[in-house]
Amino acid sequence: MFGLFKTPSFADPALGEFRRKGGMWRGEIALGDIRAPLALPGSRAAPDPQALDIARSIATDYPGWRAGIAASLFEHYAPYAEGVGTADLEAPAEALTHISQPDQVWRHTSVEFVAVGTLDGELGVEIGYRVAWDEEHTLGARLRNGRLLELNGSVLPP
Image 1 (cartoon, rainbow, N blue to C red):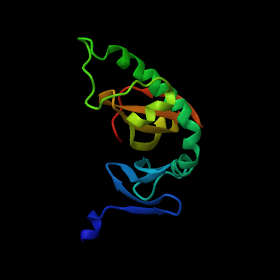
Image 2: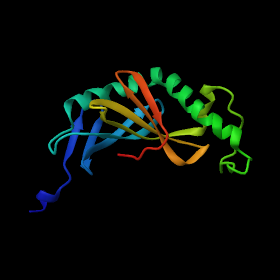
Image 3: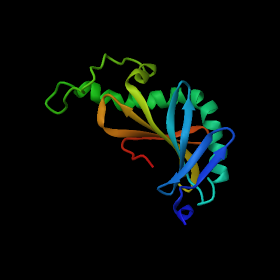
């Protein structure tokens, strides 16, 4: 009887185990030396096969995406750097050293989640970032077919 309420699971040889929760298949993914939560769409029985294929390539594709994501994060940082100390913007809790180039953003950035989902009608990847200079928002780097589509200024984990 209790088997009816058991959380479904799915094992992928490359990505490991997933559990279905909140309408998504949830597991973990390695991005370099960090691990992040991974969410995939799918049926009650298994993750979507195309979403699985995309997810399997994220770890190897991520190093090639980092420069474009860093440039977008740096662009997002610039207005905060200019506004800190003015009446409009308080300094963040984490003391920020001056970030003068895009590759320096990573010391002040953490990955909150990785999700494969529908972006404008096609499957794509969203990587959620927390950044020291914008404590109120999770930023979302949205990619499809290896191309950065946008850095969304406020996203929610799936």
